[in-house]
Image (tube, rainbow, N blue to C red; front, side, top):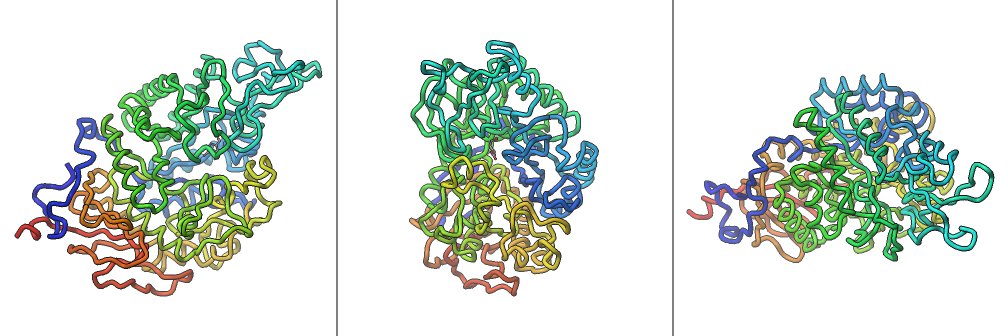
Amino acid sequence: MSVDSALAAPAELAGTLTGPLTPVHPEDLVPGWWRSAVIYQVYPRSFRDLNGDGIGDLAGITAELPKLADLDIDAVWLSPFYRSPQRDAGYDVSDYCDVDPLFGTLADFNAMMAEATRLGLRMIVDLVPNHCSDQHVAFQAALAASAGSPERDHFIFRDGLGTFGEEPPNNWQSHFGGPAWSRITEPDGTPGQWYLHLFDTSQPDFNWDNDAVHEEFERVLRFWLDRGVAGFRVDVAHALVKAPGLPEWGGRADGNSCDGYPGHDAPMFGQPALHNIYRRWRQILSEYGPDRILCAEANVDPLPRLADWVRPDEMHQAFNFPYLHAGLDVHRMRGIITESLTALDSVGAPSTWVLSNHDVVRHATRFGYDGHAPRDGDGIGSFDPQPDEVLGRSRAAAASMFMLGLPGGAYLYQGEELGLPDGINIPDNQRQDPTFARTGGERLGRDGCRVPLPWRTAEPHAGFGDGAAPWLPQPESFAGLARDAQAASPASHLNLYRRMLAERRALGLGRGSLAWAEAWCTDTCLAYVNGTTLVLLNAGRESVELPAGRVLIRSGQREAGDGLESAELPDSGHRLSPGEAVWLEINLEDAES
Ligand code: NOJ
């Protein structure tokens, strides 16, 4: 239930709570750390460069893990660090069971795991099962073999259409732009078959109708489970299985994989046979005990279908991307939260909230616009309308506070605790996301959210590394936003995150539930009660009166501008500023007496 009967809301709330959502379901009684966990995404190439080559590395992660532990998170998810030609920043894997020399060695991985264990942090790794790199030994073998061979059957090869097979086998488009098929030259030098790649040409899709592919990935799972990982974030988990016959599909398939909703009839998404794969993987994880988890990166439409991914014998978590895309539209947010909690509760699963990751414009930048929201994968360039950085950062703090009060788990993306904006002035010749090249620059891609982190204000490259220039240029504002400066400023974005995460744990918000506080839900405000905490977001342009209750924390308690000068506390009397959120301790008995 959402509101403990021993407690009561202030007078204006009494009788106006709608809920509860997420009543205690029998499944909730199964202990599961992930149900309420805060998991921090590390994007290795942009985290910390210890060897001075301008790209982050595993040793850099190990060195800075204590600072993550200090944030009071539960686990870290690492984006790919496997051997890879890096055509899609490591999501093009050429060896699933080795570390790319760019990032270090397996010994470095072991050292990182040991440090994580010492600090009480779990480590989740990325699994990329939809496709590999064209340099993977299996794809090279397929190219060297003939049409119809067992080697080709590991992938999706087809003859082309047209008199000479010169047309692609169907009309599917790649997520990064252009056709989803490329034609090969056969070993005898003649123009040959076509292979499917939902992403870059260098990322051939595996054929999940082939048992050998299943066996290979089961081996990969065990390889990393044996090394102590706490689980896997499964890349494009909705795309592995394609509809029989690969039917033509006119729907949109050109977005980033985290963008939009592909439609429930897409022949390359959400096929029923997917679920058997994840059931099998769950069994394998269970052999290692109850604490290893699977998290789906799955775009699912309509939203209630997300529940199919987190049934008790399938995955543990599935990112709530509709929430990420809701912006600060309170009606949309409310609809998505209600629909998510209702649907997921029907299978006893928690929701997994997220606002930023390495595929989307950072929320501190998204919220710096009024109305205009850049489409994922499009990025922002210097000729585009520019965000208001200060406004964006302040709204981002409020949005994070609202999200971290919700019941369920949450993912944070590295740098959001610093309120970092996207990199905007990236010269075209330094852009690395394949989206940029494959669309002829029409879509700038995702480099903006991948800019290397600032650690130390006074050091070269804001302390990312003291050698070569970072692989993407850092905006000027990064030095002032560096972690060391923020750590020293009680009013910083970083210290707000620390306080929020500590308070969230102390209050047990992740394991709580939700009732809408109707008295405070308007066209511009959204409020809910979780346990004894009232969470209120003011997404409007006018300040609003604060409900009665003890202020636990408010998002405006941070520096007002770019610098780290002392806080301009917003109207801290009894009003909540525009773009501000608050957590209040409430007591229903006050209202009833
Ligand atoms: C989703 C990943 O998050 C993204 O970065 C990647 O480009 C695609 N999947 C392809 O692996």
